[in-house]
Length: 308
Image (cartoon, rainbow, N blue to C red; front, side):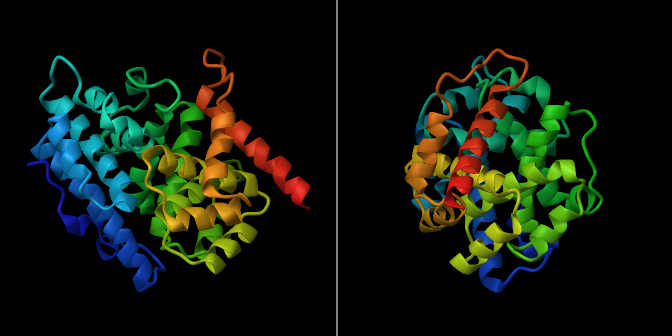
């Protein structure tokens, strides 16, 4: 009843642009892994057996399966509620290691059901809850790119800050929609209003670093094209590195992207995000997530100036 056919995650079905066969295969592998996690959660929502099944997936791809599982568990919580949320139980157990991806997966479900996202945030971690909005933005770009990327539609029901996090997720979707084409991506971002560029580049850094799909020369070309948004690109890369470090699923392409975007190893980039969390204010007017992002961006702004 709630299943999603695997064909929905193919580049041909989605009408994605510019991708080489190798890139298409990688992106479809990611999409199918996500859907596997989603369907597995719908079949078996018991934490122990669900996590056992998710952990049979290759480590490098496992985060995508946990992301899909979070979407499935959130759907079950909506249609067959229990005294304790399946999602919360998942986050308090093995899902905690994949907390970044789990929150993103929740955003997929809210987007798919066309539900308001911000009221849901109060139920989640006050820092990582904003990744739900990121996931919402990714979903809309991935499934409705003609509306949200070509026509640059925005969600008026979102607060001004939520629109920025939405754009980070939309930027992540661009990596897929534009087929990791490092010529097409900068041109697509350039067509958006200037105020949206930084968050879109942040999303590109996240997607390129976490999902991969290209070789070093393409990553270097993207780094050059991102100027003057390189600190935002680096912040996205560092967040991707931290997500993989927390989940203990390192990837060679993540290491490579961090070397280019951040001028440091993936572990070092992840440590930058950890340091940025120290004494992070959580009750001010500005969301803690944005202060965290800004601190990481400031670090890489200083690092880039030092490297000149």
